[in-house]
Length: 167
Image (tube, rainbow, N blue to C red; front, side):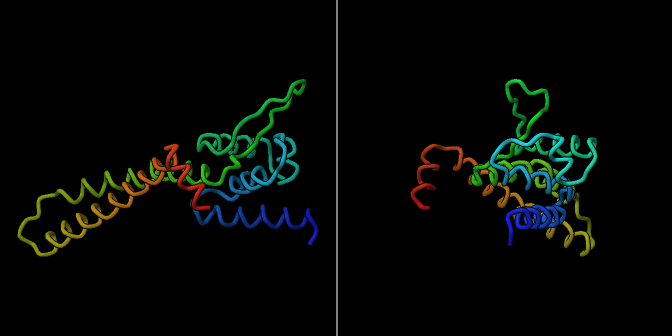
């Protein structure tokens, strides 16, 4: 397989996976393209490579920057904007985990807490509902706390040293 074909296959596959992870295909494709590019890439080159409009590229780049996994870079003497992706896979995983927790897990915890604290009257159905949603809240809270600990561990210099020793 030639380089260009392999790169295209990777970008297309990452895009398909992205839609399964809850982000749009184009956003995942842009991320993939930037992640495997050894130099920062201009918006025009992204548009050409992925055959997308300026608006689509701009909106998705802004989204990736909001996640903290894509950065804007400036080149001296260039008027174009250039972009690069987080290359450290450990840091990428931490940033994505934190963002998903903020966007998905924390709002879910809020709703689970709200619905599990209703006053269960006499009905077995109501008691079962409160019992199950309370258990689910406790489980999701433990998982979120564990995720917080893992990402905090990665921020800690001693944790980073430990992780490097494990590799």
